Image (tube, rainbow, N blue to C red; front, side):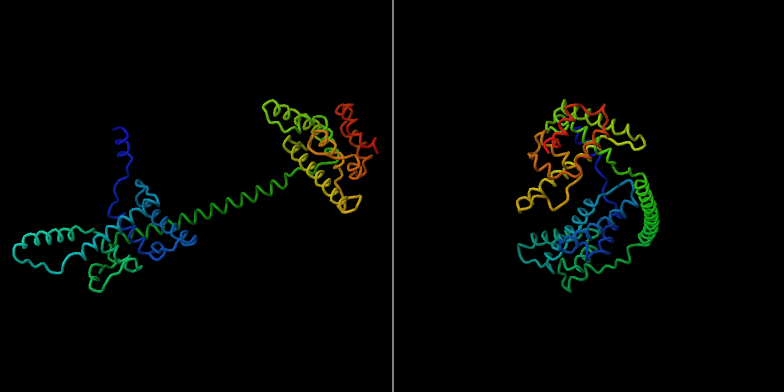
Length: 355
């Protein structure tokens, strides 16, 4: 009982006569787009726009009865079904009722019921049949043209005045929306220019070397693929330590942990690509890569190899070195003695010793 009462309370009121006339006039104005049987993407888009225009017009004059597009389409479907049924009843009615003999009473009763069906035809049936006949949905012989002898220009001055009011308000809303959109676009452009002006400078060589040294220090925790709560906490702390160290060098350019993670991802990606290019060159008979490797690839590859993320030989690392001796010295100077442990120095200097 409670659900039934709730549904009755939430049920929208029936369509008023003005609402029905608004739907019929809207369909009449755009009948060849709304009622055609084509189902292409473009035609469906036009149909949706047409039904939405009718729905907006209904809701404008009846703000307390907000109708949806699907509800308006269903109402038109019900109206057209009623009109078709009335037309069928009209055609089923015999042109003249004659009675002979004992069957006079039964025939008279049948004719009476047919007359009752005709008299109960929908109020809007002639208007709807006129629309359906114009678009070719139904066939209307010349002898039946009297049933749809309707002029849509005679629906009343009140409806015409409503249309004029609606068009005026819609134009005002469209102008207001256009101005608002233009202001929003200008604000977005200003934001984009502001972001460009606030863009952080590129990473210095000292920043990159410190980042590589920090990852080497925490490689077994930062580069592992395990994603438990504990491992994620350790990773966060490791990246935070690296971030704090880099920011201590240049407090005017504050880097975040996410920015450093992305930078390391780019460096490791470059190192992997350089290794692939080198192996492709060796396979083709050349001892060196035809593409110049990145400056820091020979430093990133040993870290990735010790973390178990790839396999690389000492010869491949040596082939990818770019001013490696100078880079290694700069690495220790950039990171500082407080940041470089003995084990890290041994790991990073091992390629040079093998050389």
